[in-house]
Length: 149
Image 1 (cartoon, rainbow, N blue to C red):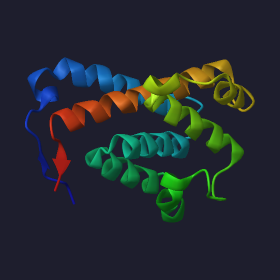
Image 2: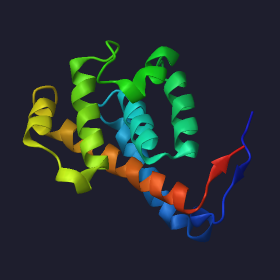
Image 3: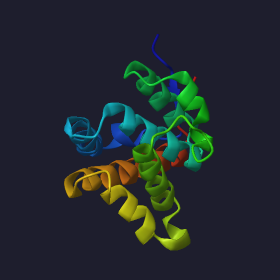
Image 4: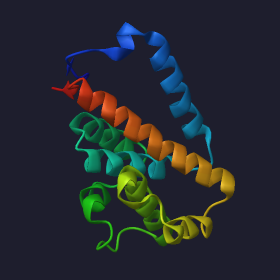
């Protein structure tokens, strides 16, 4: 079933080139070595922090389609206390939160070093782009009051 989307402004319709460029980033992320489930976990967690209901809904559905479990999605907002996430996922989620709250103290050396123990420099670059990309999309959706009904 398709969703009806409401918003105050459809920026992608106003300038389709923006959507083409943004879609290109997403396409590249899904071609990277980062597992699709991890990409979706990043997108959901960043969207939870930013309180972007549209993106939470959208990426939760994508996560389920890509093999993520409902139980882990339900526990995502409390990942630090949940035994359901691996050390690798914890390293990514910690950096996702630090980037999303970058105004607090940037990204700590400790958090970055944890990423380095699990990923190559190329993969870290992909993870950082994924986090920043989702923050950008959240800000567009929230600014335009994009909701799915």
